[in-house]
Amino acid sequence: MFESCMKIRHQFSDYLDDRCGHEERRSIRFHLDHCASCREDLEQMQAIQAELRGLPRPQVPSGLGLQMRVRLSQRTHRRLFSEWRIRFENALRPFLLPASGGVLTAVIFFGLIMGTSFVPATTFPDVPISIVTPARLKELPPINLGDDDQAHVLLIQVDAAGRAVSYKTLSGQVSPQLTHRLDMVIYFSTFDPATTFGRPTGGQVVLSLRRITVRG
Amino acid sequence: MGTARSVGVALEQAVPAASHEAALVAELRAGSEEAFSYLLTVYQNPVFNLIARIVFNDRDAPDVLQEVFIKVFRGIRHFHGECSLKTWIYRIAVHEASNHRRSWLRRRMREAFSLEDDGVFPEAILARAPDQPETPYEVLEVSERQEAVQRALASLAQPYRAVVVLREIEGLSYEEIAQVLEVSEGTVKSRLMRGRELLKRKLQGCLRK
Image (cartoon, rainbow over all chains, first blue to last red; front, side, top):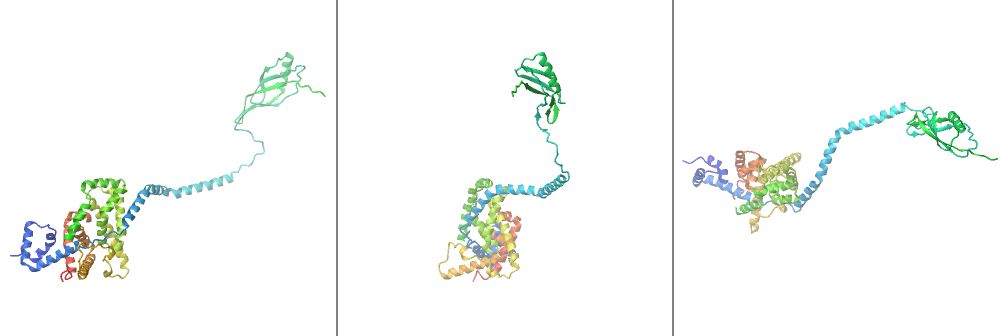
């Protein structure tokens, strides 16, 4: 007894792809030998299969291969930098608005604060506060050196209050009378004290004295 | 049948052997342009053929082909050899062509269109069959038959058409088709059976006059 045509036709697809077992293939062939309708059905499927396999194959348009190579090459060389640039920009983007707002706010507040706390210009002369200044002679009383024509160089120690503390003679011979006169001169002299960063401090003053004769 | 077999043999020879495939993939991952040129040389024709059969408007096939190879090049780092390179490329091609076809149909749904105008490849793009008929009558007959087959194929629903194209035209095995379409072999078998049945109905009386 033959299998039904429906069941046999259900196996045609496997039969065409050679996926039937030995027994199934034998059964199909036996059925086809005795069933013209199924044989015609299978022949139609084989004809369609042949037509499909014989269809002209669309060809890649000329130039498309080269176009793709160029496009890929461009992407290869571009993506290394562009990817990192895009990542960097994306990473910064969330901070862009807050940072801009913060800077703008800071500038506005700084302007407001500076505008309200305006410092007027002083009427006093500027005091050099950022340098070290030596002690200077401010006022020297008259002195009579007598007949001594040689120069006398003195090293005077000045305290922070601008007063002479001590002195010593660096050159020149000093007689007891001249020593007394020099004591009086230095006692009544006034000095500007030395300063360090604007603060008065002790220092030294070198003073050179020489007799000058004016004829007239 | 002779034509089909010669095409199949030529393709098998062109596709790189499994032993060379790993080296090719390594080169592609390293960004070698020479490797990509080789890949294009081997696969651009079969992939273009596959795409042209799936997209509705064949004039878009070159654009889709470009997109496919761009994706292949970009995605090669994620290819870990779970399937063959050929199967992987075909999978991308089928996805890309199917997506393109869907978007194209959505666009065309707004406009009036005729199935008669589309799905048939322009003469300029078709390669001539090796066993070309001799007489003008035979030329016309073969041309009309092929046109009818292509129209019938184009009118199949996407799942059936993809399986039929991959099996009958590209010559893939059931296992490979299952990997390309990411379905089971049973599904491939049933879709192929249904697709062949539909084609037979559409071409009833056309092939046997």
